[in-house]
Length: 228
Image 1: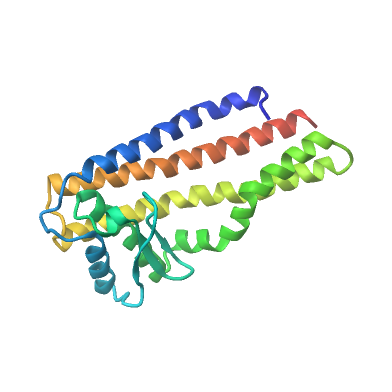
Image 2: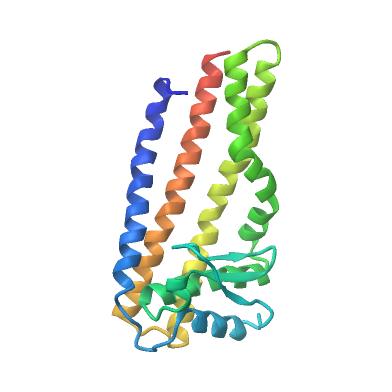
């Protein structure tokens, strides 16, 4: 597991650490900058959902920090306490971003639809794929090639999922900024810029996840080729 190919992952690991630091520091910074509209993240999310005729999508409070998400299975938008109750640029930006996912779902946005469709096998592949791959390497025998190849195939679905996540996230952020500006929840200039910085920092974590997954898959192919 820690052979020479592991060096491929070092840049991705460093980038992941930086991305996690960046999103937390940027989010915390703009939690201290309050929007002139005085509206909370929950209020903005509710209004944006209503404006998109998504009256049936509830906005709920969820525990945890940066735990905000839209659940496409139950069609519920969940916001952390700082976003739900907050009136900051960070709160409104994140709330609008998650609302963007709900709108994507309602409009059958293709990358989101495909991503949701492969989620079960991608979730399986993220863990079982790696496990089968290294079980095949460790135990050898006539079945080793089959286990290695099956592991690579399953893990490939996870990689595809992480890559598909990028257009989904970038599109949701773009929608969020347009909605916030068009409906006057944030003012042009410093307020929109602050929200954009928060969303850009969050996007870096998805880029880091995709890069890590791709490099892991490349590493698996290299090991597979070496051990043939």
